[in-house]
Length: 363
Image 1: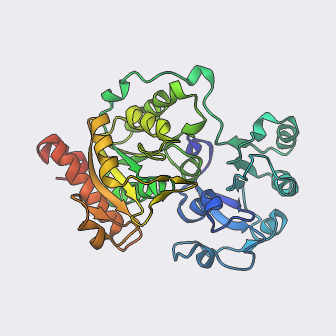
Image 2: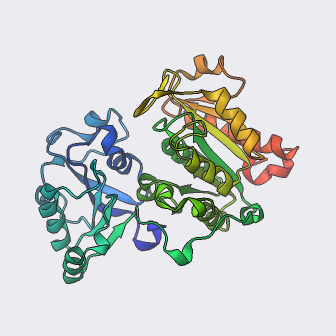
């Protein structure tokens, strides 16, 4: 899915983050507000944090100074030019909360398109499709997997992609793979490189990835194939492709998805995202985090790529002494540029000479 093709970017938008803005459960809303190249957040809906500022709630100076309000009705008053409602929370259990129905209806009646990260698909519900048609609005379900005619097994065709492919993997879930991927992409663009990126989760699609699929909704046999297709599509238009990974190869619950992304993207280089203080896996406390060294061995055993850098949540200087790899924290000043520098050096080393990697290294 490429939402860039569906909108006149940037789109004035209202972000629905009810009960989760600034929390882990609102990571999609948080990412859209702070990072989206697609949606220009004009108001946030969250009764829990209404009246505060996004910078205060998210703890970052990068957040836009827009109002946080209690309802879509109030958001439309504050941002009458809004053209989209982004549903940035997927409640536990997967259902659409009854309390959100009136908010979504208000947005549609105002002519707003609805971009949903819900597990239920509004575009398959006659109630919502009829209301959208009546008011000239569109419904986008970003979690909806590709149709059967778009599914295929991986066949290695990604090997023909001329662009350099850089995959972000991690030592666990929720260690910053999407943020690292986006920051690398943004740093590359700022450095004048012809870069694009591929999302494998709903947040990345809403932030504005050039191609994306929520890969954990794709039947297992076809996951590598859909990733291949996304990488090939972005690689056809760009010299450098960054790919967002999911979970980790050492994760007993989710490693199948991780391996499908590794094999589907067949990267030239890999960056590992890591939270150094984490010992137990998020939501799986009985599973230990194996760490950077174990993950690196698996990546390099199961692909032709080298791990070229670590994206850490910790102090980059301290973590740099622990690993035989370049380390950077994308939240530190100069962190994204430092990580990109390590990636460019790794790509050049992988080709034997810097001249062979000129499109990426700039040399």
